[in-house]
Amino acid sequence: MDQRSHYQEQFNAFERTLNGDAASPVHALRRTAMGHLQQVGFPTSADEEWRFTNVQPISNRSFTPSIQPPASSLTSSEIEKLTVPAQDRFVFINGHYAPWLSSVKVPNNVRAISLAEARSTDRQMIERHLAHSVKGTETGFTALNTAFLFDGLYLHVPSGVEIAEPIVLVYVADRSAAETVIQPRNLIVLEERAAAKVVEFYVSNDGGSYLTNAVTEVVLGKRARLEHDKVQFESLSAFHMAVTHVAQSKESVYRSNNFALGGKLVRNELTSAMNDERCECTLNGLSLGTGEQLIDNHTTIDHAKPNCNSWEVYKAVLAGRARGVFNGKIFVRKDAQKTDAKQTNKTLLLSDEATIDTKPQLEIFADDVKCTHGATVGQLDEQQVFYLRSRGIGADDARDILTFAFADEVVGHVSIEAVRDRLEQIIHLRLDEGRVA
Image 1 (cartoon, rainbow, N blue to C red):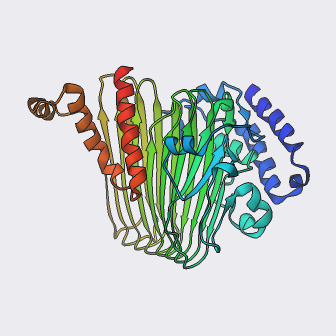
Image 2: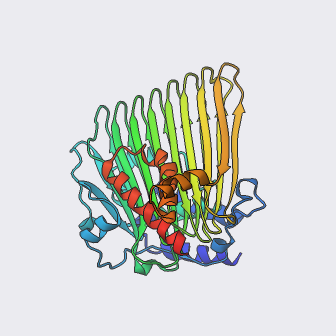
Image 3: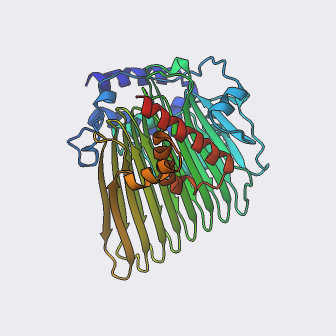
């Protein structure tokens, strides 16, 4: 209750800064979400969906929501070192849009602006889609995000428009982020036959302790196509909670590549709802944990209509005393005949103390389907290590080569070359850090 009272006090202070915005429909969502947080609090290991992930290190601390934009001395060159060069780049510092670090060159008929601005300029679209799939009453974390909903990316791609260049979102926690909670809220809407590539980077330029609590809502119209990459490489003292929900219309295509490479306690929840026929959904993920990290991936693919296909490959590399969690659900509803769904979870343990709790799930209520799922856990093949060493390669390098080969199946799915290159750098860096630790 101390934490609930703390966030209620912070919410009251937040309300006093809103002026006319306090009378908006969005603020009604905020109030409802705060009321829900006061009722349920944060999840505990007694909740089935959280039994392997104890969030007490978060719920026992009183993080301060980042309400005001910070004064920051970050430069564009520093942003590029943390991420990748990009033509269309949106930078957020502690969750607040930083236009002086951003570069926006999207087509004129595409709306790519901060959510804080869009709530005034694109009110009709915001009221139609914002908090439609993530209402803020799912868990204490979505409630907290919705209660302090303020800024993030708003992307609207109209019918028939294809954006050639990837849109890169950079969420930076700077030195002033210590003991704060950063809460991005992204809304991505692609109309019929629209296409785009969106990359989310979550990074830190300091090693401090803070909480990132992000929510992204994606709406795909008929035949829309989205490649959605997420690279989380935050401080190893930071916490990261994230929810992504995708609503797919007829014949839409969604491809996700999710990389959890930093953070002390991390949880990613990703749900794709295929609400019409002939949709395609591909979920790829890679977790790399060392030291005392805990990385939890929960995915849900909901086959609600016939003739939809889904493919899922989630991998984890765990060293030291790191822990991994994977829970992948595939629902095939009664009317979803001709479903084709494949799910695979593979874990590579680099030490005797690293652990993984994996639970692939299929719930099938239709009879004319093709569905497979499986999970494997193993270690490096010592014969392969010996083979590389016999060719003059050192022991550490041999193990890194084999480890990266295991991870590369997921990295190779990223179509943007600069992002693939950056991922390779981060993975090798994390392997080196884990070895030193």
